[in-house]
Image (cartoon, rainbow, N blue to C red; front, side, top):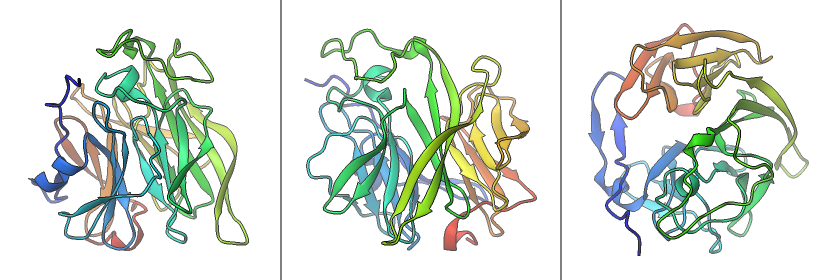
Length: 293
């Protein structure tokens, strides 16, 4: 039996001008909610990490932010989906599926072998784009959808030797014995049928795990600069992978995720377990048609 049923992630609506509102309807349906993204139509996609023997999954939330329905998956089991983006031309979803909930946090007992970058496919299927990750985390497209970035994040001491259901080990291409702190870049090209093909994975930048921390959530601005949440705050690289600088915060909680918004799209919201910190920038983020809200 699952001993973690009292665990929950509360979903909130954060106003860029200040304040937040709990969304209990979503908190109850989207178990252990994690990353999300716009559907470019006024709604959002939210990821569930699952709980106990309940698989992780993808939920679509309508524009009222009250009604969520599961995206069909043909009964496939996911580990603990972390972050997600959408191709607005085809509606295809690209998402990361690490195994933190099983191997580090211990609130999931069922799993799929491997930790992957996946995409939705016709017929309600999830298919691997790349399974050669230790623990894929943040994911984001470049402004022109010519590139896809994925962070890989793992600290060896996070590994739980045993869960309450026994020793659980996911099949990885590499053993989880070393720290991983990097972001990779893929080329993205539109095929004749409109499908966005992802290929040619290359190292974009690598961080010093001890000095910089781990690159978690990712976002891009209209200039193509890539923002990553880290232990110190937010680190920024240009589209060539050159480090531009770091915005450091005084709290020691780090930054787990990021969101651009505000009336001109130039407010960057940095989020962790306790705070939502608004940064006013001189450049706007890439938000699709809903950036002026």
